[in-house]
Image (cartoon, rainbow over all chains, first blue to last red; front, side, top):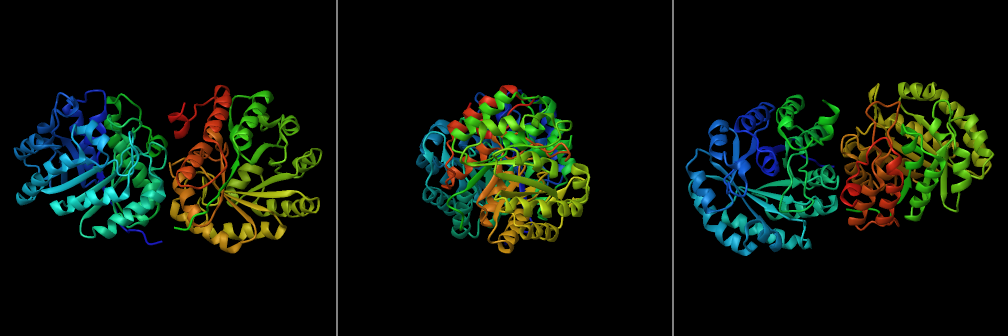
Length: 295
Length: 295
């Protein structure tokens, strides 16, 4: 069993997690959370996003978060469209995440465009970002199942990733948005993607909706994946994807990897401290196993 | 990826699950639960146990449960010692489960004997059971980690299983009693056991204490395991093993297997109905993902 010796965790709690939190969290509390997460050893993180404050008021403090939290590590800001990208250009952030859904219905509900239209918009934006020296991460939603259309074809995922690679992205983050993929499906899709795009960073993004997230992490490790999107405390879930609650919790992934002798550079005690910082401000409880067993 | 096409589920909820339930459940309610479980398509089940009613009052109705629930399927009754075996002989049940902990400390706390003493007791009992035509299942606790001693050596597990095979048992049920095994450890131990004992039924028993149960099921499938102990509603956990709460839920395992195209013969809707029958009588909520998403 040939597994990676080291794994990079991309912490998505402050963006993907909090974006779906009902309580409006103060900028100060978010900064304290992010700071604690960073002190646990997390090196890559989705900090915030430039989305419409009308639709996602939680992210309206994006500029303040960026100003307070940028450091030498890789800090992503999600910018879903030209407007977001233009706002990003006014900051010092040099790593951007863009996204698209493989499933047409999902993409329509999410950003009111067909997948093809989204890709037509993103092509020139990514070229421009790369010309300016940005690190570009492409987040690919509904790569296994769509809440509206069911099973998504792996050929469609590979084709979409291929377009992104041609656009010049640095990273593909491939997501099981509704937590429906089996480990077998995870293994085969990530194996195909690893083979098809050996020179692009490949990240797996799992949700624990049906308890299969750690099984899928294990399957993706077997396919050679050494980058995982995870969310401290298991925060998150997509408001446009019914039943998608629950990104896999960073602490549960880090614990499993540590037990397997796979290095992440993250201190579990400090990670728990970070979750404790945000916990009192949330509308929901923390469901992660490691947090429950260690607090 | 060469996985089994069919898997046998051994439902342990009525015994392993309810044995650790604080509320005293009426015999009538247990029988209704078992009946619904059977109607979902479950073919093998731990029905009850002959243990001291002083220590485990929940199981004091073992005779009534056996009388009401025996059928042509494989119904196990746990009998941990000579006294239990003698009580079993007075029933029509023909399948017995015995158990031992690989870890000395665990075995001591559980049955006040060293592992060696337990095995010396069990040898002649198993020979006798086999002479009388019983199906004998050996449940091997703490096969990965012990709550008191930490990591358990896989050589010790293989050696203990080897003794059981020499005694003539039909089945080895090998348990991660405190839900601490990683999928890597599960894969390697079950691969060793499959190779060492090709002619004995091999069953994997996982707890979801740290969210790794389905990952371990996936790993064990890869090692060729096609029998899993699971508990409807995720009932259970061992009172003598701190932090061991939560057998992996039957419905979560069956859902994952079904999604993988692996046949169990179990109807998920009916399984949910069975959990609904027992839920109102429990001291705790149902934590399984499938139940939460489908009720």
